Length: 221
Image 1 (tube, rainbow, N blue to C red):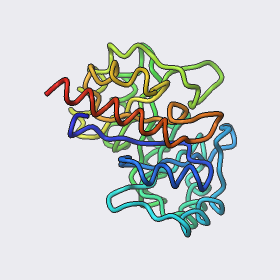
Image 2: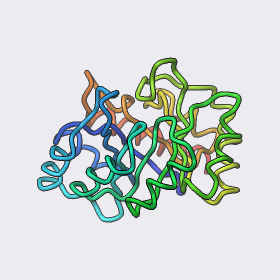
Image 3: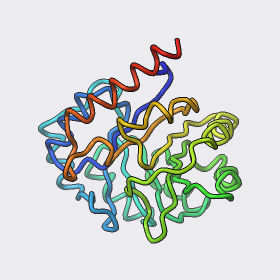
Image 4: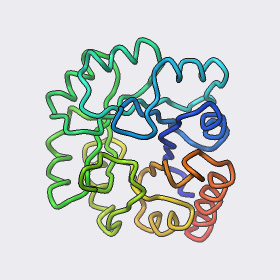
């Protein structure tokens, strides 16, 4: 695994999910606070789980929202000790800035891959402090398990590096294909369904993914 590769496990939607991901090498633990997702959780649930399981030192909590107002996001922030807000909808640069100002938290913006994606990343410069590039699926905001053409990953990584912010690649990343993705040297990977069995996080799938990333590092060194 490349030493600077950051890992985010998103869509934690049970106490057991959280136990598995906290005990992984994840840098970021994600929760979806949007009813458009089958992995939607309530702030009350997450607060309760965090009383049982404490993230390891250095692990950060990411709250994913889809077209939520700054005020609605603040309601969640008041209950859950989030470190980062992830806007995964059609939020404008101005809305992203407002969310950051109201909550006092850094905001990442999800960009759905298409021919305009790089230009849209530039639109958020100075507003978003990180990006998640996801596969574009009609009628869906994310969590589809579908991947995009990873040959363009270096372009996204270069733009994020120019802005001085992290960039995670999401969409269909799983143990069977993560080595292919790592050939394009992403700065980070964002995995949800790829570490699940029957819709729940699975310890063996997490281990398989991390073993594959470790093997890839050994091959590249």
